[in-house]
Length: 313
Image 1 (cartoon, one colour):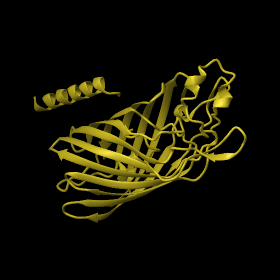
Image 2 (spheres, helix red, strand yellow):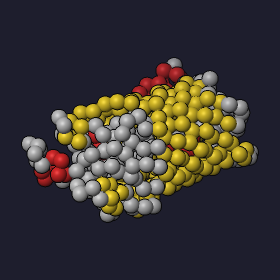
Image 3 (cartoon, helix red, strand yellow):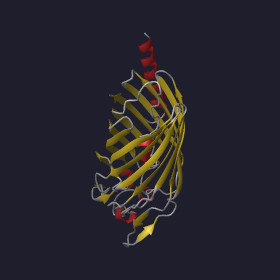
Image 4 (spheres, one colour):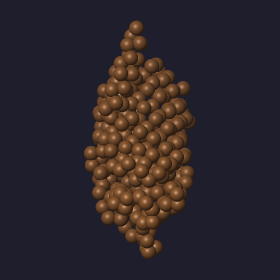
């Protein structure tokens, strides 16, 4: 009876949240869900945390324009020993928008995480990782190059590093992501001048031909409320871009894009229910509070939410 009641309550929570909000916990370039930077991390000093897990998540994100992004992700974690784990994330992404529809395998994330301090009241973890592109971010529709919002890959090789401090009540994390190359995207306003699309709408997308993104630094602060089977968390996720994005303009010249540095920040709320020590479900919802004026990378989301199932072994 107790289990049935909890399951019913969880289902009602998911349905209610999903109907009010839109159904990846952040809209950054990917590192805020890698290793030590992940939200809603497990913490329990009474029961040993299982480092091997398979998590399947389903994401929906809305943008300031028409594209809507759907992602199904397999998040695989392998315990190397009792302090070290290795994470692989394999996303499949679908985008639906006014300029076209795209789909394909998203960027692959690899991350090694090590527990460096294990105190009776907190854990300190560090992560090193990378993101591997699955295409050049050069998808097109009827011969017209698509903006970055429609791309299933960022098209760059990125290095990622981060650190987190976790206690029963708090999660504090910071990380950095640095891209090493420009992508192969070809979107410019001038490339769509011969199309039948509304040119005013085309100009709402930022030019992104051969985009080289700036370096990002993230901070996560999260307050957790943990119970025997339920947990809830609320948090903030500021992401600061240190240097301007660069593109190739219509004359073949490399130029910096204005207003691409500075702060983007999201508010996050999550809840989870553990069926037992091996499995559970999570729901995470985020809303953008602050965004940059210019976003050639197509990463801005208004609302995001992820529903996932995790099995630990």
